[in-house]
Length: 308
Image 1 (cartoon, helix red, strand yellow):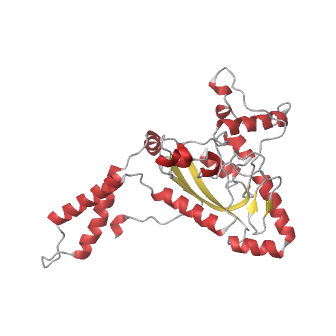
Image 2: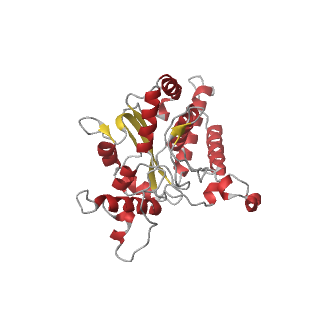
Image 3: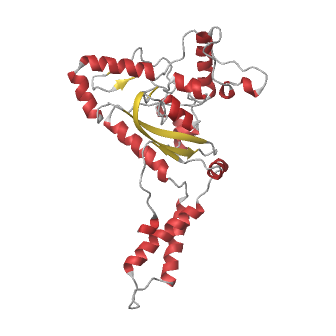
């Protein structure tokens, strides 16, 4: 499904290279496992022809009002934070699992009353894939437990949900993008992508420098995250130190080779940490099936610890 998304929806394998977001210049994606084990993708996408930085984008908007207006319309068409008009809340029906929104195939555009059915199916997917936010313990995990009784869920949610209702997409006085929002609990998403994939497909713009840096840090953190307890990290370091203390590397003169000792310290500690890493069943199955843990439009040079 990931490759189909990249090849068709993003347009990587199209002759024009144009997809749902326009012409894509590049992407970098990593696969992450939730606490429950399920796998999902985080992806950064670069649009061809876009200004090099958020600062350049703001300068262009300030100098070209027509571009600014077109950009607002593009974002409004791309990111949805509202339910389709004339739709109703999802009502569960009895029957086979294939009738569930998240397990059904995309609708046939040639079917009768397609647009009306599509809009309702869109809403059904939103309400069944986690796109509609509901407060839970994850929202407040950084707040000390002893003051949880004082929480105001709508104010203290770390995801800053619900969002304020916004009548139309616009840029505020600081030049920051504000997306039209008719439902403060609905995460931003692209309707076409959600309808095609039938799963949670959050979409967020990086229209400011801090947001762009935060997104990059977020992605890189998932790339290297080991999900290990502090006690395991320190025990691995202690074991590595003890091993080198008992049998330190020596040079040709029989003296302790400090440089080699430092290198081995890094290698041994890393090997022990990797060995103690807990993998979910889904991660293990994905690896055995030869699935990738990252996807990118470019090639990167591999880096090996042994080169230290």
